[in-house]
Amino acid sequence: MSTSFDPSGLHTELFIDGAWQKAASGATFAVENPATHEVIAHVADGGPEEARAAIEAAGRAQAEWAKSTPRQRADILRRAFELVIANTDRLASIMTAEMGKPLAEAKGEVAYGAEMLRWFSEEAVRIGGDQATSVDG
Image (tube, rainbow, N blue to C red; front, side, top):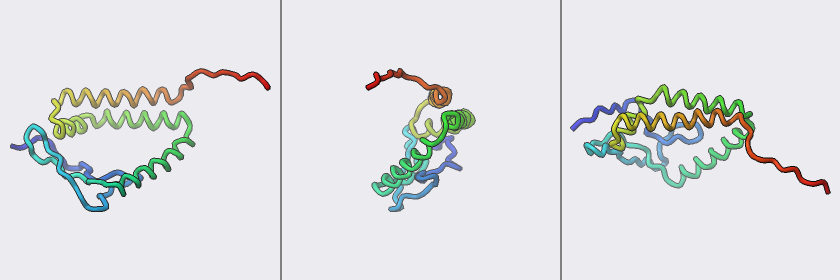
């Protein structure tokens, strides 16, 4: 039985430190469509070495992120929202193929996730919380 999922252009490597890469061991694992049991992709099977590299890269990225202004952060999150919305059909088809989720439900889930990005992009420029002044001395 065949699926309508088109895996062309789908990255199956690990994304670490801004680059796609295979697992150091070369290992992969199969991703099956649960409805048809058809293998839809073989993806990189990262191990401890890749996990450490990803954690170190995230630490470096966080240090740079901390230097950015609230407006810069908002713009990045807003752009992420726009990209998710622009790719709704593709993202939903991936979810449907790998989870067996109905396409309409997958599209709703993509939209929900995108709205989180939009909300946080708007919150990034707001300063919230309570401040208390301390007494002199």
